[in-house]
Image (tube, rainbow, N blue to C red; front, side):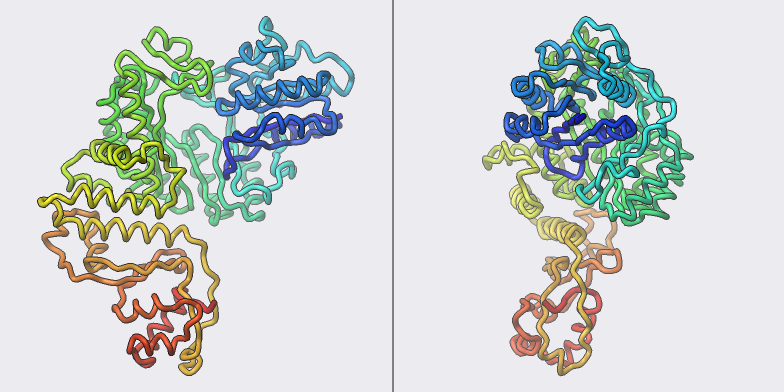
Length: 614
């Protein structure tokens, strides 16, 4: 007996992992049912995918349904109903749980599973094997008239076998993985679906977490997206897991969602000691707005705890939502200014989505909200946030995505915005207007390479500071922007394999080298070490106190760090001519430098991985 479980992902990415379906498969391993996991993507021809699914005549086909793939699921399911009229077709997941009646109305689906799926799916498989009818299973809704509630949630999540330890998911097939540490949420934000149905948090045991972590480390997993709505709510447990990660899997990059109010200095330091990034749901910096959606906010406490992250060197970012009840465009801009003042590494901004099944969907109309009734359920207008203002906020969000987040501008953004005498939001609005004026309004960050964004930053800043009164700052501004671009590109570049160091002068003369792919050669208007030694950038202070002497540097990774070495112009010229074809002797002859004068530099460049033989 074959059942196919389908996941339709937004796009190929490190997060495109069918974890929910893998949990279902792990729950029925002992039933004798053959469960096959199938992955598709938005944008594919779903009719053709339906034909692929129909192969082998599965008894049942289930869809993991979310906001982003509801339409694609409906198209594919409709085609399957035509091709396999006797097959059982069903859906589960957040979208099916939130709107079971809407999913069932078209008559395509035989039922939907609402809430936690493992128990009802296991009962379904048991009945299919024994030839019994599947109606009446708790958590399984067969018609719009059904009043069957959720199945009772498992009190012990460890009863579900781990899809990873059971080898249901082959780690070699994915560039990243999803790692669920808990289910549920203790908070009741009106716009969120996490806490509806079952309030509170259930957690997998630390013993299971350690076993999975060791499995990930042994398999060479590169990055892990942690599924835990408030990872750090139980501070003692969170710290234990962070210590576990440092000991077992220090080479893996982790992504966490955390709440600011549970961060203390010890926790901040633990985050900083592993390779990770944190996402913190600020949503708005207006306590009045947040109270209307079931959240609280204390600015001083939030700022103090974020300062702990900055002091420790932890990487973090914020979420902001525009269009919340009672918010305005000005209020959103104020929230953006506050968020950026705290030096997040990234800022993710979204329009409000009024999701089915949330408290906001129940009461949104009485709050004056108007929104799309079909996915993605985006807000259209409110009494205080008109459609034109929402469009403006969307442009601001896109400008922030491109210029600040993808532009990796955290180290210099506030200093340059201040020197332009603009607030962060007004600065980004200028960039949004520049995008429109240069016919780039429709461009999003995903359309651009890092080098594209760097060039856009440079052109925009030269235009912004091109006036007579501000032009004097441009050399320093360009040095800051260029340096941090080179730093980030050296950090993100694939590491080159080092070659043996040639110490013989005669062999060195005949050797051919190339600059390694992770090395960046840079030229600056100021001495770059003076800029770096100045600490937090202050454009006016730098202009008044630093000499515009010019400098050359090489920026490269070494022993887990990014190094910046100032070079003499002649040594920089040597590197720029190393093309993997020309001998060292020929390059030295061109530049007029003796091997004796260049010898120590060439040894250093080899030893530090700046150059290598091709």
